[in-house]
Length: 434
Image 1 (tube, rainbow, N blue to C red):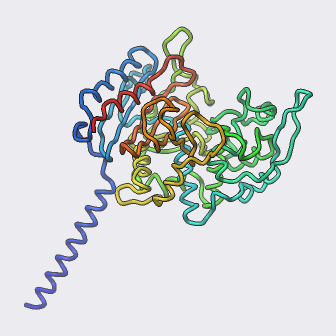
Image 2 (image 1 turned 120 degrees about the vertical axis):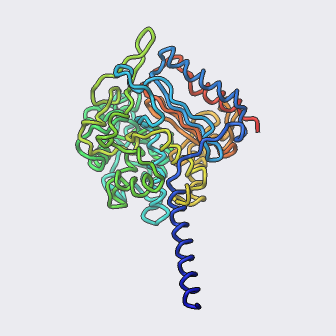
Image 3 (image 1 turned 30 degrees about the vertical axis):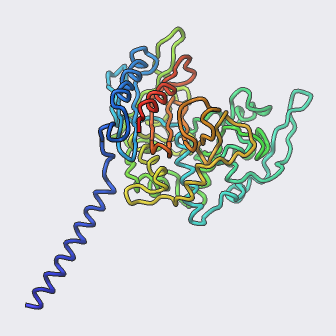
């Protein structure tokens, strides 16, 4: 009898452990739950007005379509897919349509750097030359009176925090007004933010960048450029893994971001949203089918071996919201910890000090940070952080209101009169009643 009771207790204990393991796995894999907006502190009618507002941009042929996802308290308060994923093929936009998220990639790369920072594989105070020695000899172009420029030494080494905050002095080559040595970047074949079609790989590209004249001295100006592409290459050197593998192992798989890739698997190709551009006189048309930043890009049929940490990822609204909710939770989602809370705090704190930037806004590590609502002039909360992408996408996280907002569409700039970002923000915040 005693043996039977002991056996029974062991069986019950094993059963409890098995049920617990199954429950934990289910929890980690769960989707965000859809919840009535009024139960999350929204006025349902006010929030529902976003449907009409977002649909109007499709009806007015300002965009082909969009996906919007709003979370509060980790639950879905609003989700919509408007318009078409591909107008010419008559494919409707779906909530799981895949988008080129461009510079929204930057926050994910910054997270990868901070994972390695926490482990001691690198420090954000490390010089870039520790990983790519050629950068120790980088030069800065200074305009001279003859209409050309002189090359001068760096006043100090570029460090990883400079890159995380876009204060390294490294711009985007090939754009007009990006310094006196702009043509040198054009001649070297490194221009614009689109690197996904390159055949030489990100590390070779970063080594080549070190030989070109830089736009400014480190720590003196905020200059948007190849900083996060360079940090993607740093991740490869510091981890010993290609960037795609590192991100998949450390971020995408743990968070259930199965639809996030630099280049989509063949079976996902039909979900990739087409890129559009504005037409002169109004309306939109497909962007050219060429491998450039003003076309559809070489995400499906290109060389697929340069992983652009500054602008290369494809993702969905759900996947990107998972990543953002992790940061809002202090580095954890569904029992999976990616970063420590103090690391997230460091990332979402302004690091610019006295360096000029946008009104009311500072720069954290890979994200902008709202410091003064009145100075910016749009609704939000102090401490809000976010960014956007070149294909007209945006996101932000509001820790005060416990909000995650992801808005994705695919239209190239410039887009005169396209004010959907501000109307999305106004409609959302005006619907918060508690």
